[in-house]
Image (cartoon, rainbow, N blue to C red):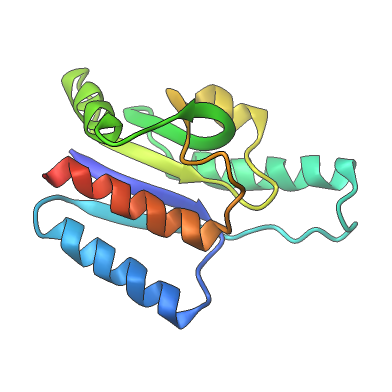
Length: 150
């Protein structure tokens, strides 16, 4: 079964790209991993609530375009269940046992994810009680996903 990391936005820092590339290469030796990046929408109204809702709607459409009906979707969200070592492997095998073709982990933008994406998700998870930059979340998630191949 394929593992997909679907992230809103891209990584600009070269050192972070290098870390991510290393994690992807390590994972790919024993499994199939794909990273999909979608464009992050700009906040033209500087944080006004109505603009954030519109931004999340646009990003949601982009996310939904990349999902298949047969995907098992796991979204990272503040209100998600805290996940610990061993849980990623359990999620992977749960999705596989119910016949899913892919397990897709979604990392939203700095504005988070829309209610629509959270509703489409089979599981909401949280990596930490801390707020972290999205590049760091991507690295942490890729490191954690390595347990699938252990």
